[in-house]
Amino acid sequence: MKNAEMTCLIIKPDGVGKGLAGKIIDRFETEGFQLMAMRMIRPTQSLMEGFYAEHKGKPFLPAFLEFVVSGPLVVCVWKGMDVIVRVRQIIGSTDSQKAAPGTLRRVWGTDQRRNLVHASDSGSSAQREIEYFFSPEELSDYQPNAWKQAEEIVLC
Image (tube, rainbow, N blue to C red):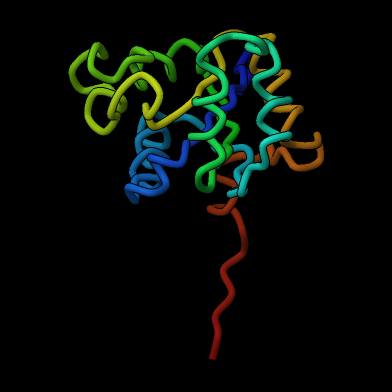
């Protein structure tokens, strides 16, 4: 994909706990985005303090960190045209109760903290967030239809 960009998406503990990870991933594949990397992690306090370092000292951070380390996260990298803006449109406003109808946060989110997912808000944030969780070798750039050209093998 020429001129495509990448973004980082994190399915938070409420998304994993509600059994929605597959539905969330399906939504982005249905939109035509290419999955470049994915892993499930059990985050530590220090890992997430580093990730959210820009919010250090803000009053909401301690309670938010308690929530975000309460269960596993699914961290993904998606590639596509205008993927950063489009992903943020699909997930909706930070406050699930104020998110637009049909957005992921409106459909499955609970409130401003337990809002299902995190997504990069800019190109520079996307780069930093992707590099925080993945090495360049872990990003799998591929041709989605390459499997169609593979020689068919008949198993007896």
